[in-house]
Image (tube, rainbow over all chains, first blue to last red; front, side, top):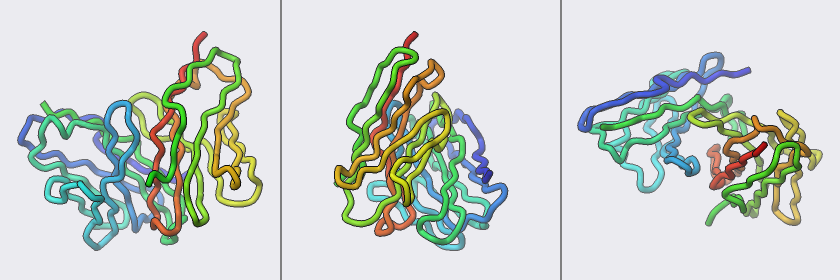
Length: 117
Length: 114
């Protein structure tokens, strides 16, 4: 089946530094990828929709300068948490859409646990 | 307005007992419905999905769900649970009017006790 690789699975960084998270579709091309954030004991909240070759669409309340998204190729989207602070500590999950139609299958990465000290 | 609501935040059950995790959705257009399972510190695994056709959908690990349009529900069931079913379960919806995005419910923590 379709596989989405998310890297790293865990990262610890110091406050003020930036962290990059990668999301790769391994056996299909993904024109659209999604980035979610999940706080402990809570649901997944959509942060942004990433479209290859264009600017990401951010959800209301998500700082685009804080969470930089780049979707430079059909198989790779990156999320960079800039100037990270402890409140950015969370579980980040990406998903990749296999197809252009709105109801094309979605495949999830295994998530990245970010801890900011 | 919340598109999908999971009515129970926690469901404790004993091993080999049946379980139902409830999910209701709100939409005036056609929807696709999903159930995902998440084990601690892991990503999401798709249990089952309803796109069209038969309203009773069978998924992996012995789970099934029934789409009820009149009650706008998509409850997840398993006739006999195992300890290994302990996890967080998320109901999710996709609507054509919302683009491709998947909207998740709040989640239900299923705890299976021996």
